[in-house]
Image 1: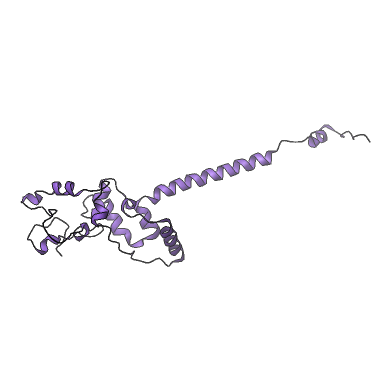
Image 2: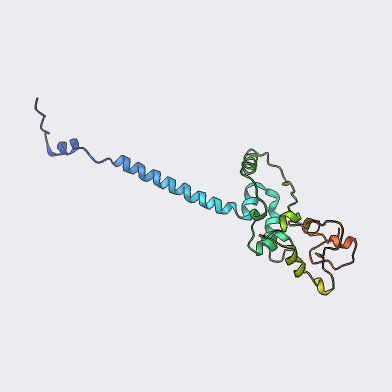
Length: 191
């Protein structure tokens, strides 16, 4: 049996196998979607490192902390750390499981507010090669306030923790004033 000749030229073109354009279009669409997901993921990851992320996504009572972090005249330690290029996640290191649980609680509306207060200002946490050394701090405050007074001199038998005085997200407390009459730095309070 002989193949039938096409009746006209347009029928001949229609019967000729065409390139696979659908597969090419699908590959382009998948590539564009993958690029968008990657760019969005990178953008989210960068935003995740910013103080505004903590306030916008999970911790709704964080407004004063975020404002204090960015305020040049703030007396909060968060502002001093921010001025030195440190972000929230340099001190707050939540695990993936904590973040997933907090995210799920936020989505379902079961997120706790205010956020749990964690005392990160222990000597073990603050005094390390990456952050502060006792020698550096003692030298920086050797003649504090123009007087012969160093709040970081180790002259008590009680082991002081950094957080006994220094509060990151609220006014710091001059615990030395429990025993000494000393000038309070601006923004500090007496216990």
